[in-house]
Structure formats: structure tokens, C-alpha cells
Length: 420
Image: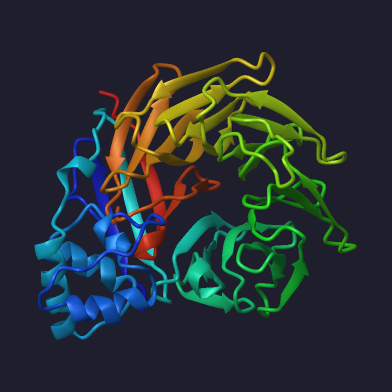
């Protein structure tokens, strides 16, 4: 049974801090003694390391119940012991709260919990029939929510696929990137049949269906960019000009754009690669054109393109929102409301207004930026345990978001100020 949560949040609202989802590659730490420790070690640590708890922003008992309840089903007694233990030892951390920019816009969040707990919902999108699709990375599945009946159906993928992103072709097929087993694949929604293509790249990341019918994708760790012809099965993969190709979008002319989530690094063998950049790609020749970014420490995780083919990007490592004019190469950036450590992650554009999130804040915060006024407004995400890793838009002007760590996806309705 899915759970529906609907909230109307004004920009001034601030929910209690929620725990972070990521953990670093540090040495495993030791849990405090107390009733509940054994449950964490046996239940929580079976899926992820306990360092994620130490790196969290903390929560109260109700909050912790909400967090682990989206990951695993526990008996009430065991859940109560676990929630009390976590709240006592890992309470809310005020420093992780967002700095909220005020304004007179409102948004309505509607969220659903995906059926398979702990799957780490990612990259939801609206299909042509109005259904919302998502990937369940940790469970190697893709899911669909019916727009009429609200029924959710999950389609199992080959073991170890760990799908990252999805895209829909003109026939209604759903394509996915198998980040865990080096594949790209297609799901037929009518019968659940799956067809898989093996890539040279070890970690296909973000896919895109081009108007020419081909599937294009980034491969972050492999530093590759790929093209698959679905009709022939021909697969072409080329090295990228910088490290960690990540977000991928297309402009009105059919040119593709890549954000690079990494500073300058060396390829194996000592061949240098360029540093912080955005790059365009010709869909036919697969040739890159590089647009250097001013700050070499920039990590441009994702990007979006407005109606004038201006490229907007999040500078995740510096806590800034950026704009690139491809005609001039000029880059301008704005500090995000929560500052340098806010880690903006996902980005989308509605009516040439920019929407992004501050993924290191608890709760995760959705931010509106109006390029005309250069003004910001912030909206805390109700289930903001984190994080929105990608967002897309619907045909009727809503945002589709998700919270990977709390197993949720949802819609954001934009409510403009009332004209008096």
C-alpha cells in the first residue's frame, strides 16, 4: 500500500532537521551503547554502513521513525526502541538547517512512498500518458504510477543493474542506465519485457532520447559519452574532455549539453584532462565544444536550458547557481541562500524561472530563482531527509521531485501570488 502525503508550504515555513543520506569513505565508527544498538547493527547496517548515521543531521523520535520506516518495516516495539535510541544519540543538528529566502510564492508538495522499501528512488519523469516513472537503484527496478488509478507497478531488471536514470522514447518504451553492471536497457511497459545492451563504460549514468531516435548517455566514473541506435543496436562510446560527465540536456537545436561533476584529473596513463567546464556535443559527430568555467574548483553536477538556449547549472562544490551564455561564453553565478556548503544538486526550468535544491540542508530545500529580479525564495521539502538528485517537469507546469533516502517521489504545484 502506498502512502500519500500532501502539504502546502509557504516560503517562511521551516521543518525540523532531518538526517543526511550520504556517508564518506572514512573508517567505520563505533555506535554508542544502549538499548537499540543491536538493532542498528543487525538491521540498519545490513544495507548501509553506520557512518551515515554519524554524518546525519539528526532527528527526533517521530522523525527517525519516518526515516527508517521508508527503508524497512519493523514491529512497533522494535521500531520504538530504535527511534528512541537514535533520537537520544543523534538529535537534530541546527547547523544543517537552511537559510530560507522569503517571498510571496507558495508551492504544494504531494509525495508518495514507492512500494519496495529501501530501493532509493531516483530520477522520476512523466511519460506521454501522464504516468510517473522512476528508478529504484538499490532494488534494480523501474516503477510506474498510473495517473488515473494511482496504482504503482514495479518492473524488475537484471540483478545488479542498479539503474540510475531513465528516459522515454516516442513509442512509450522506458530506457534506463545500468549504473551497476555497465548496461543500457529498454523496458516495454505493456509486458515488462527487458532488453539490455552491454557498454564499454562501467557506469552509465544519465540517459537522454534525442529527436533523432538515438539514446545518448553519460558515464561518470568511466569518463565516457555514449550513443545507442535502438534500431540497429550499434553502440558508440567516446572519451569526454573532463572528469565525471554527469547531467545531460538538449537545446532547441538538438545540441546536447553535459555538466562535469569533477575538477581536473589525469586519465590512466598520465594524459591530462581539462578542468571545470560545461561542454556541448554534436549528436552526429560526437564532437565536443568546451566552455571553461571560471572557478577551477567548480563541480557542475546538473544543468537545464531555458527558452533562449541559455544554459543554467548548479555549482555543487561552491554553493552557487550558474548561467552560461553559449553565444559569448560568459558565465555569471549567484550564491545560493544557504551559502557555500549548500550543495545545490538538481535543477529544472519552468517558464524561464529556475528551480534547484540545496541538498546538504535538512530538510532538503527547493529554491526558486527569478532571473528578471535575481531574487530567491526557499521551500523546505516535507520529507526532506534528502535528497533531490534530479527533477523534471510535467506538461502542465509542475515539478517532479524525489527523496532518494526516504523512498519517495512526488509533484510540486506552483502557486503564484494573488493579484489584488
